[in-house]
Image (cartoon, rainbow, N blue to C red; front, side, top):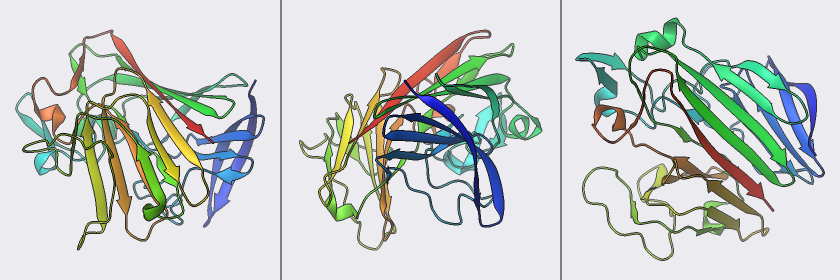
Length: 289
């Protein structure tokens, strides 16, 4: 059974309250004030998540830990969503990872955080909603579940995703065990069938390496052949898309469960819609070994 510990994160002149679930030799830490995201997942003291030094402590978008993506994944065409004929600006991956979340519950069983609309969200996303993020820890598996609730009087359009940064020795040492229907570097245009062995390699002349996957089967797994560590991402049927991403010279690989693409909110039939009063939960987990 897990136990809850309260502490602080302090570096580069900032100080955040931290909540940590521990179970045996594993520990999962969440920082409510920083986008409600998980920032550390250790087993026997070995860190499986990656924090970008200086970025996490700044006001910039977090490009580390496990950011929560809502109400969109990636960036819409032209940087705007069109709702009822009006263009609303939207940053890459929405706004949930930029805002402080409120602690609704924190005990030995779970950490539950909530996010509700404010002036900023209404400026870019004219809808009423309530997000509840629930974190659990059982042995070497961290459970993450995001519940989206429509608290308004009109249909709520959205997409959901997560952007976990997993620490690795280097990209060349990472082997993936993933089954998917398609695999491409661009969500637009033809989507080629995924190869039997999906790889992520450095692209000449580019700082980023990316694979966009559809029809992804549960689970996705990566192994770092340098030390044998593995990370397994399981997910429920509400996902189905996946992203592999890496930046040159950085010691991480992102293996991400998504349910929408960059421009999905602007495209009929390609995003989620919730009726007033309805809610939906997106559950997934990370197992380390």
